[in-house]
Length: 131
Image (cartoon, rainbow, N blue to C red; front, top):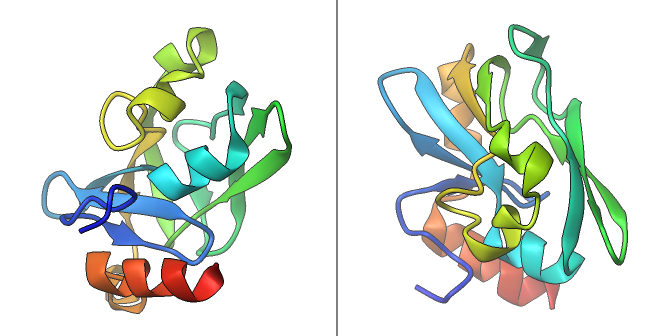
């Protein structure tokens, strides 16, 4: 696997990742590729806890020195928790996008949608096509 990919995660074309936490609970964030493309992250607009979103809906945003980029719901979900440390230290997404830089813990409400996401190999292939 390349440096941009964590092999246990599922990925979207818009560069969000999901990692299973418990049965229908996942942690999500933005991929290493996304943080690398954005440059230094200066602010994160986090989703609201308790709110439900449909796949593809904007749930938050990332502001960087280069651009403002939306964060999309990878699947239908309910937000269980957000990583409030990102409010004080948004650069954590740059340093550790798959670890301490997680954005939200979510409950997946339509688990069959998970099969539509990329696995690590598929995401790597998608990244190489995109360049």
